[in-house]
Length: 229
Image 1 (tube, rainbow, N blue to C red):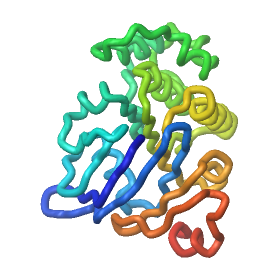
Image 2: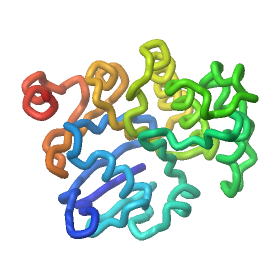
Image 3: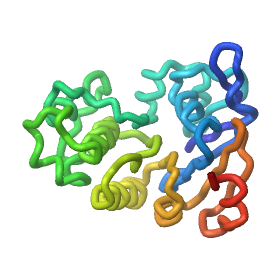
Image 4: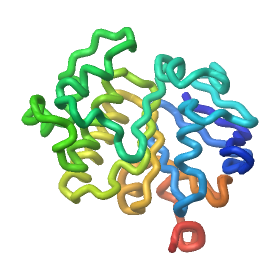
């Protein structure tokens, strides 16, 4: 599904990513972890094409997409929910969902998103900007899913969200993996959330991958060394 080899990227004169290798297969949730500022968001932006790679290779289903535009990557099946969610605050929930279908060339029923997040059914006529942070996150994930991606990337989907909605998002991601068979690359700071949900982990430090493997084998010493503040 997603294969990244020796990926380098950065901003201006600063290199942020150093020879990153990572893979995600269909039906797998991989959790990307690390302290703040180690390059996790930069990696997602580079995969999406929002930041150009300086070296290395990004492939989706065996096809190299390293030099493709963000729009072309989205059409090829990469979905991305960034930090801050980036919904349209002055549009209703229904309008936000329908906006995600523009230009994707797919006739998709909104029920696909509303089935995963039934809470949104009550708010279809409500402006996105008045939703809670958790409701906005559900809307952002629902928007991404309506484009029917093969790979869904989520940047800290539980940040600043009340526990009850975190559980709803967790269950939705689990269903995205098991029922839809999507590959999911998840940036997450909360270890317990990652351990419950992810099949594999990747830990970054100073822009490089320093540890990876099955989540069930993630050791306390590794957590203390690379994740403890």
